[in-house]
Image (cartoon, rainbow, N blue to C red; front, top):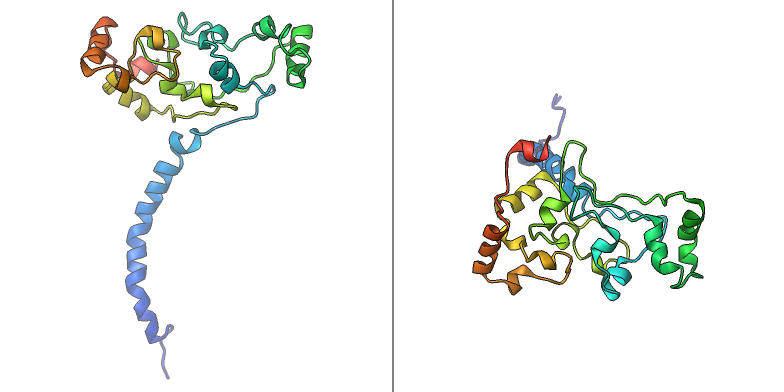
Length: 217
């Protein structure tokens, strides 16, 4: 009487089991490296805000400059979220009856700030200076994407360390005249020659650091 636990045909499965045993560790490494990367977890993040503010309307159709609302980007590391007063500078007269403005008007009446949900957020262990970038010709679109086309803003880039280093190692493609930093439609690769881009490096004294302490302070 046969003592074999498995029938003879099960031997045909052996090559597949060996291959699976060799591939699975590689798959696990890839799954962790890619599946838990900022590109996967953060890019595309699109929370619902307490007020349905349309950047596509304000920055796009109306052509409002980013700095009207985010008025600290040229002088500070932080891009300020506009106070309710900034909204009401226009909306005391423009469409004050709109139901979309109920939360804004309540905030204006009570003095309680609107609790906007932050979208573009680096880790607490990282430091980023907006002024250092926009004053040297790095456009808003390089990090934030085509905000002027977003009805609801989302994070278009991973904002990971590797992504930042890619730009620090090769900044020329992202450079433009400082006067064009808020122009979302400006495309340096088409509107500037290689010589002009290299000239901006010298003009703005751009030599990005790759030292750890630059961002991790």
